[in-house]
Length: 74
Image (cartoon, rainbow, N blue to C red):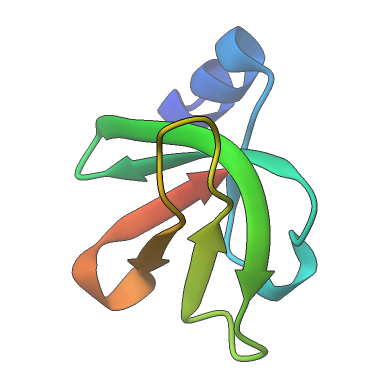
């Protein structure tokens, strides 16, 4: 098993590159192997380059982009 397969097996989530298809799904956002946040995808660009995590509680809506190194697991 590779590292990614182990991560998926342990967390139940796998790396996704098709961000445009994730609207409404709960995802984890990571950057450089560091966990950032878990939230619901509010909106994503058609070209999969950016997505917004919906506001929740006191947290505001947040924007993440692939170019800066963010990754999404769902």
